[in-house]
Image (cartoon, rainbow, N blue to C red):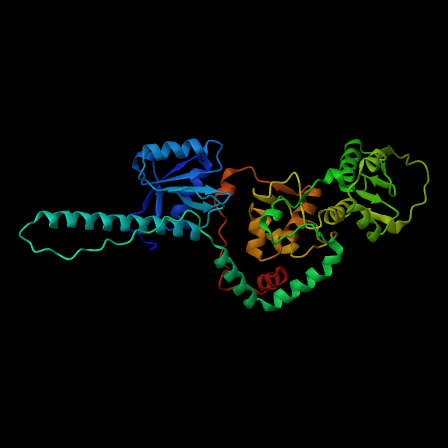
Length: 409
């Protein structure tokens, strides 16, 4: 579509709050270069509905009854296929918006041409003195596609990115290969299957991780040294120094962290106070930073899954950078963190933008949530409109180039 369209589309928004409406208005005016404007219902020639709104079905029926010939665009996190509607998957980006508006324009032009041809045929049939004219074929009407399948385009873009960044891809593969044993494998989940991907979750409360996080909270609230006893080795928590002590190495901890706890194991969980006045010999090399320990527990528990309390179809963000100097750096952690610090994003969108495996995004957000720096966005606008990538300046300084190289840009 020509970005300098003289007569922009007039779109009425339905099922969106005032913030989202204002953002959509600016989005159409800015990134979409004025291809459409937001107007009231009476002045609109297109209806746009947030299909994830609780009353979306009622809104859709009402709009079809009020303006049966008006095109309707549905925005949703799910793939929708409804007759006589156009679909854009959230979060909206410029490419999707322009593609759908192109289709609406093409269908309108085809209908107009068909109507003009029919009118001309009627005029000719009424003129008896005019010799019979050859029948004019009506132009074929364009089918109204409801679902824009972009999988091929995505694969092509990914292939192009892989070709352009061969060295970076090789480094990533080495990184991923080195972490395969560290994270552990899940033979019962196929991460290439979208249906299984969306259900690849775990409940921290069924693992050692959940009890450690609860013990952390209690120790911090009470400001006292506590010991978590279980069927495994006792874990001592020192909230004042933000440290833990456990007489185990990473290999032993990883094995216990990935094991679901049954009723018998849970019944043996006990949190007791520790008398710090009692002198106890503890090996210095067994002390660990509290956040670093629970970060590792989350990684070993997740194994590429996401925590059950997190909605992966809604955007998430980091409220601060992880302290990578003390933490295990999972594959592509720096690049994922850079995106989630910039703006809220849907986890699967992060995997798509960075061309990384979803399980590496899931394991990273699991660890971030465990130490309390990952938040779920509650703003409607964050799910409706995608964050546009900013273009790099042509003249980059030496420091910027070095940082971009380190970040994998």
